[in-house]
Length: 412
Ligand code: IZC
Ligand code: ZN
Image 1: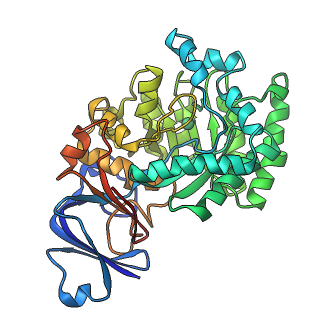
Image 2: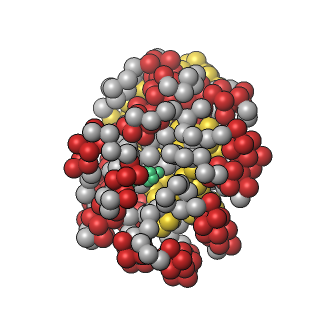
């Protein structure tokens, strides 16, 4: 299967197979009047100018009509698979009840745990499939998906199996993370030790046996899991072959980002309340800062100090955090807008944050995240002439066409 993407007005992409920090984060390659050749789902040539008749022979031709083309977007942080929603908590939220207080009262994450436990794997697949179709139509071609709404062996496995099933039935690649340490389940409220042991002795072995996740994540937060508990679990998971991610400094800076650096976690998430010592640790640990601006927006919280992290050389990724509690949006374009307006990131930095750096945050930078020869042919044609327009218009879906593994999967 050969395809040619022609008449690209502007091709904008970061370069390489590693996360880019500091000044590197803004080093986007821009080619005017470009063409891209693809074969069997892989980019075989990126060229300035038109393709020759010989190069076009046997190709399905896709015409970009002079518009902007970028790599497919990568959403490196979602809680994709869940039962129900939490619209019933909106009223409380609007009255000012804090996120963690809703959780303490048995709502929040635990409300979604109840609905996820009550859902069959088939129900979960159907619901998440709708979300993935919407994500794809918004330009997301790969996403990460965390468990963490089962909180027992059977239901964590059910969530992860649902994520695996989704890979087989629709185009968006789903990369799984085990996040059993998302909250203490109702039946272990008085037995923290028991729950940690359940994760170590039963859930992790089953997950690795079935190869159901590549990462292990922990909600390291005041009133949820401590730094010591997070460290114990993540080190154990590392020994079982799972790379580390940490929800750190979302609400209180209790040392989560310092731990992420110490464990050389692949990424640390949220970082709204990160301290100087946390930023240093991330840089030293080679950890990517995965920032979630739509969560700050929805929770009406401050925005993470992205500029400071970039200035100090930490590679920044931007993701949605799609989940029913703190970010009921899966629109990564909106996150790009917010990254500009609220983090004060420039459009080139934002592009890198949702493509190459996001790919690196899910250990896929060797395969996706840039438009270069040898990379997977995941591309978006935008109804925009350049990155500035893409980052400046908000509230509209600017996707014109999405190409996944060399095939047109969305045409609007
Ligand atoms: O369901 O509330 N922050 N976990 C940590 C979440 C948000 C998801 C949720
Ligand atoms: Zn999250």
